[in-house]
Amino acid sequence: MSVAKVKIPEDCVVVVFGANGDLARRMVLPAFFHLFREGWLPQSWRLIGNSRSELSDDDFRDFTRGALKEFARGFDENEFGPFAEHLSYVSHEFEPGDTSPLEDAIRRAEKEIGTKRRLFYLAVPPPAFPLITKGLGDAKLQENATVIYEKPFGTGIDEFHKLNEAVHEVLDEKQVYRIDHFLGKEAVQNILVFRFANGMFEPIWNRNHVDHVQIDVPETIGIGTRAGFYEQTGALRDMIVTHLFQVLSFVAMEPPVSFSPKHLLGEKAKVFESMEPLDPQDVVRGQYEGYLQEEGVAANSDTDTFIAARVYLDNWRWEGVPFYLRTGKCLAEDRWAVSLGFRAPPQKMFAETPGEDYERNYLTFQVDPSEHITVSFLTKVPGPQIEAGAAAMEFRAEERFHSELIGAYERLIHDALCGDRTLFTRGDGIGATWEAVDEILKHPRPVCPYPKGSWGPKESDALIAPDRWRLSS
Ligand code: BG6
Image (cartoon, rainbow, N blue to C red; front, side):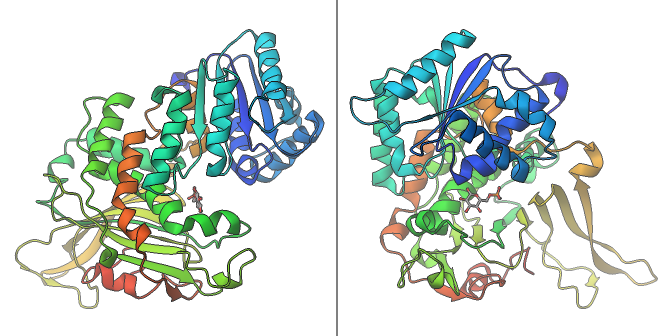
């Protein structure tokens, strides 16, 4: 984001629900702090923390200080005081007919800074979404409000419809910001810029030239202390439906008329509508060895900690092109990438360097841990003979731009404060993704065990054969 162009949002009162939870601690509060430090928050703003825990304002400020020490970039104690002046805390759980403590605090803060703009951030487990939304409606706090919902938005198609209806009873879709922090990542947004700002790549971005696509998000971490969440969710809901499908839509969408929420979200929704229901034969479910011994996990749990899937889009551009998706916990590396594998030339005219095992050209977007774009190809090996050897051209964002990347959460929170929904998700699109996985959620195949630190069950290699996962090959 070029500093000169950063928009400063209008004055606003922010309420963070689940303010002393893990997500607030690791992501949301540090994101507000980073925005504050950059001067990208409104001129006047307040942040009211809320949860069921009884905390004083000072307790909440101490909690926030601890969170920033641990998770904010380059935290300096001297910066905390000015930030903390904006923070307060109200312990209150919405119950039918009782909205007063939080409502009072919001109205008081609004009066102090002279605004009626509100941003509610629901950093709470999804089962709490309907109750909080209803509470906002009962207190008429939904007026002039933007509401950010964490993910997953629903746990299946039926639950999605129920939740979406409950939300729409109170809010207009334009007020609903379903967050997916993957869309806040620079390298993911760069997929769109790379595609639509250049003339070179878009003409080959289709089934005539692309053999397959890989979206690969391995993680080394396990479930940590999140068994309660993870047992209900698993990798399919937590990562595939929530994040990887969103990334897929950036790779697969048609060029939007403009980079506006209406056009971008419309094109994404068309991708999801064209997604063929996933066939159970095209999905490998895995569970890392030792998962059943994790605290809070049921002794006979069938929860997936790994998914590899082959997905097809039934549309003109992508008919017959497999999109391979893979993600899992306790895998060998933390390095995630999107790769387009191109069709090989029809004839092998040149001898290839022995032992290199080169299959095809790849265009790879590495998203984490740092942003790279790599094109791999064959080139002549110097010497009297004509021999083709593997080579690559690479772009590294940090070398070209020398600027610290803006974190995904701060980018998206700033967008929400400015009323920009472009990088959030729309209800119809999310509904279509739940439709696509309905069958595999209702009739899951058994999980295959895999050792910690590996690349998942061997069945996932068979799924992509004769090609191979780029990251693990
Ligand atoms: C979260 C998932 O949304 O994303 C986690 O709930 C996952 O299970 C995390 O580890 C990955 O995000 P990031 O930004 O660390 O790649």
